[in-house]
Structures are given as C-alpha cells and as structure tokens.
Image 1 (cartoon, rainbow over the protein chains, first blue to last red):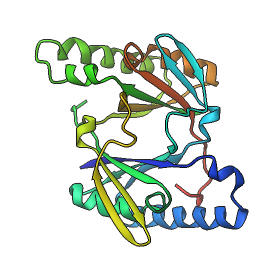
Image 2 (cartoon, rainbow over the protein chains, first blue to last red; image 1 turned 30 degrees about the vertical axis):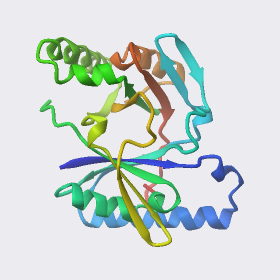
Image 3 (cartoon, rainbow over the protein chains, first blue to last red; image 1 turned 60 degrees about the vertical axis):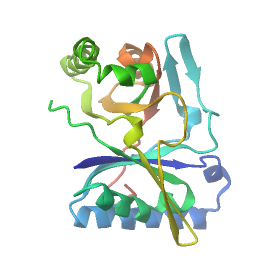
Length: 113
Length: 122
C-alpha cells in the first residue's frame, strides 16, 4: 500500500538554526532516505522551501505566504510503499521530522487510474 | 522548475466522493484537470489521498512515540491530493493551480520543489 508522509515542523526555526545543527538534521534525513531505499519502501520525496515563498490560491484570490495558520508548516513529504498502516507508522516514527515536529500519515487513494 | 500543487479540499467536497449521485460529476472535474495538465505536458506526478479521517499523526519526544488520530493540523480544509508539475515559472504554476477543482471551495498551495543532487537528503 502507498502512503504519503506529510512532514510538519517549525519552519522559522530553520532561519536561526546553527549550521552544525542543520547538517546534523540533513544527515539524519539522508540516512533515513537511504534506509527507505534499501527496504524498497521509497517512492518519492522532497523538502519544500519556507512557505514565505509559496502562494495560496482560493476562489477569492491569491494569498502570499507565509501561512500563519499553524505553528508548524508542511516542510516536505515522502511517498512510501508499506505492507500496512502499522508498517507505515514504524517508518514514520523513524523519520527525523517525527522527533522535531509531526508526521501525518495518509493512505493514498487507489482510484485505479 | 518542479512545482507541487497541494489541493486542500473542503469537507463538503470530500463528502462528494461518497455521494453516489454526485461523485461522477465531481471526480470528472478532477480527471479533466489531470488530462488538461497531461495535454500541456506539464504533469509529472500526482496522487489522491484517502479522506482525512484515515490520517494518523506520529511524533517522538525523548524516545517516546505518540500515535494519534489525524489529521494534523486540525484545519477545516485538508489535503486531498497533490500533483507535481514542470512549469516554466511560478506564475504559470499559479494559473494551473487556479484551475484545480479544490479552489472552488478550498484552496491550492503552490510550492517550489527543489531539484536535489544525488546524495542529498530526500
């Protein structure tokens, strides 16, 4: 089954974080991605730039980021292949984001396209 | 540039998925949107997500794992799907975002996806 991990963390924290700490977290993400690949669980993934660079489009118009609707913002995602939800939750707990923010695990809707 | 369109769907629209009388027309809008992107050769990838009620949120603090029912954060509109497109610039991506069916009652976030070199995180 395919799952999407939505990685929420405090995006402002990255602005003031020391390089050593950033590199430590990047390294943890590299190791995590590597582990996903070795288990054939990795499908896709990407970090997303700060939401100040994003646009939000509604019927009423376009809103410039950042989006202050929550302390934590979507900062990246993974698409993974897992046997079941428990397996997906195991992977989610190992994601570096789980230790600094929250990982939302969503099953992909198999609409058979 | 690679850009992700994050379709944040209103609760009433999620309900249309399970409405036997209306699901066909509702999903037809999504298929038409997907087809239009493919016809313009900008579509890279995409998926729809199960309803927010199926979400689970995982966090770990001091080695202790917390698993809660989602979604996270608990906002009115929730991610219903996404597509990655290859657009010449943000303005073009915004135009495509505005065509997404989620915009009618919800919203679409348009965010750049950095191209990472081999070996970088994610």
